Image (cartoon, rainbow, N blue to C red; front, side):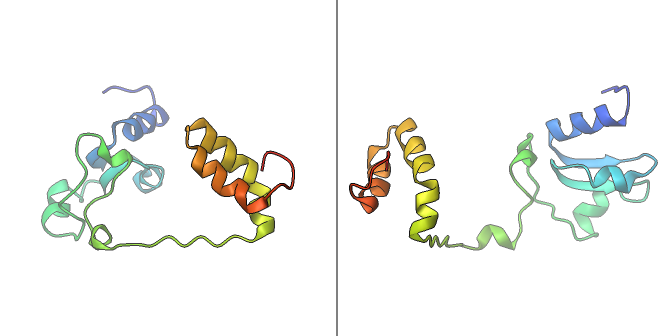
Length: 127
């Protein structure tokens, strides 16, 4: 693609979300720091894609077909399981209760809204 300037090029790079991206320009490191969607970025004339695939240590299993906009290269993190723990106080739930019930109702999940409301009994408001 031909672009008018590097800012436009950066916008296209982030929209395209390439598996491999080589940056060959002045201040390439600064431009690379602004890329948010790429599987792997290779900076300057001495960092070809094949270096990353076979020697430099970057992953060879990278997101293809634009998936770099929501996925990363394969890593040990892909094999780890996490558990989310949520702990709110009464005051904290009070602050967000209307937001939670509104979203639950918008998603047609009345039980989710009721799970908030029941905690407050008949204390008025939408809660």
